[in-house]
Amino acid sequence: MDTVTLYDYWRSSASYRLRIALNLKGIRYECEAVDLLSAEQKSVANLARNAQGLVPSLDLNGDILTQSLAIIEYLDELHPEPAFLPATARERARVRALAYAIAMEIHPVCNIGVVDQFMAMTDAKPEIKQQWMQTIIRKGLLAFEKMLQHPDTGRFCHGDQIGLADICLLPQVYNADRWGAKRDDLPLISGIVERANNLEAVKQAYPTDPAKAP
Image 1: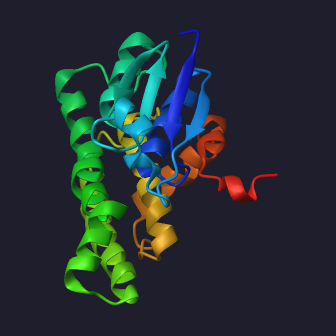
Image 2: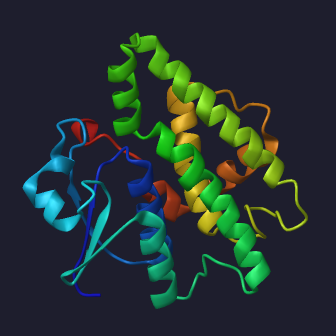
């Protein structure tokens, strides 16, 4: 991969996942910002890359991929080490169930476009947005904590190596903290997040507001 460009937004959960994955694989990439606050994701340029008008998109030497989980699994096939998915079909099913519990259950209904549409259609007061985020994220993380009560959970969501489920969990916990969702009674999640956040690849992917960057 000679030229790798990630079109992302610094606070996008899906973009955060992909930054973590690229860093863990040791793939060098350049970031091109797509400003969601100014609706740049709906621009002609971004729609040419991503027909859904979303982020992230990953350009691999002119071959553009979309949807973060699809991209992460693609990268895992191209670069098998470190593996994001375990060896057996049953183990992979468990890891995907954990990843999907966040990426397909919590994340979609907390997506800023969905929440803003809900706010507009219901003429909701601003504080309802935070209540919505707190309620949905809290409910989802409670279920995720129960899913982690499994013998295959180790230092990370599955075993002792960071993988696909952890890559999905970290951005969701970042959003939980951002919106003030209670999680101090979720010890398995908290332990995994603390260990993952100590990894250099994860530290380098952490959301940083470009306006505040040195």
